[in-house]
Every structure is written in structure tokens, then in C-alpha cells.
Amino acid sequence: MSVVVREAELSDAHGVARVEIDAWRDTYPTLLPSAHLVGGLDMARRTVFWRHRLSTRSALRTVVGAVNSRGPIVGYATWGPCRVDTLESGGQLFELYLLPDHQGRGLGRRLCAAVGEYFLKAGVSSMCVEVLEGNPNRFFYEAIGGRLAARARHPFAGTILPTLIYAWDNLELLVGERAR
Image 1 (cartoon, helix red, strand yellow):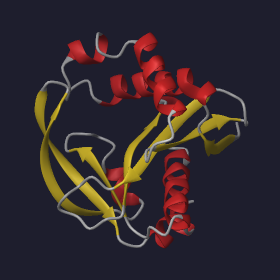
Image 2 (cartoon, one colour; image 1 turned 180 degrees about the vertical axis):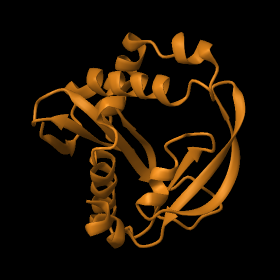
Image 3 (cartoon, one colour; image 1 turned 135 degrees about the vertical axis):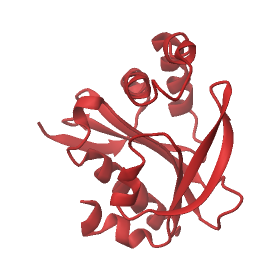
Image 4 (tube, one colour; image 1 turned 90 degrees about the vertical axis):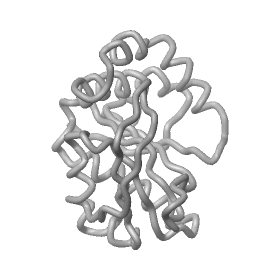
């Protein structure tokens, strides 16, 4: 099955919402309250949210992984200017989620490399990502060259959780051979 990485379009809203909900329920069952994972992740509401997000041209951008160029969405990444005060990183990867069946196949690396390419084209040479400390997928960022740069604590789904902030000081390395 061939997966194409491309910029998200308004018509992708439902597919992105589906990936978000499935990935959150698969990744965070021991970290987030079940009330949030069940009741807070409603498909209709998340689709409306994603329609709005994809229809507005803001600093936040989205790229998706789709089966063929028009097939179902199986993963997505969002990025924009860095919001981490303690880092001098130019950009930030805000979200990277894949359907559970598509993890471990290189799509996450390809989405991160695509985000890195967008940053480099915009003259941004560094990037960070903040992940929940208990996220079992956090080691992925180390595997693709992210270094642990900081720790923080943030409110998340009604609770305060520890986070880890990974950084890439040279995005050329991320978009090169190691991320493919």
C-alpha cells in the first residue's frame, strides 16, 4: 500500500479527526481520563474542529499521509512557530498521529521529514516537539535524532502531566537519510 504525504485540504477534516481519535485512544489510555478519551473525543465535534482549522490560514499548518493521493487519511502532523519559552527553536511540531495499523512503517519519519522541509524552505533551521512523558511513542523522536532538551508540566485533559521536549538543532539532518 502506497502512502502519499501532502498538505492537508479542507476535505481531509473527517479523516484527520478519525486519525486523531483512534490514535489518542490507542496511545493515552493509561495517561488521560477515560471520560476525555470516550466522551471528549466525539467524531462530529472533532470533524467540525478540523474543518475550521483547515479552512483558516494561520501560522499552524497540517500535512497528512493518505493512501494514494485521494485515499483515506492514515496519519497527520501539525506545525508552526515554537511556543516553548525555554528554547530558541524556530519551529515546533505540535502533533504527529498515525492510525495504529500504520505505525512502524516509516510514515511517522516521512511526516517529520516533510515538516522539516517546510521549516527549511521558510528559513527555519531548528524544531522542537513536546510530548507527554508517559507517551509510549516518545522514543520515536530519539530514534530520528531528537535530543531531550527540556522538561515541563502542563494542564492536559483536566490534569497536570509531565512533558518532555525534544529538539533538532539542524533540520537538514532530520530531512536527510536518517529520516527516510
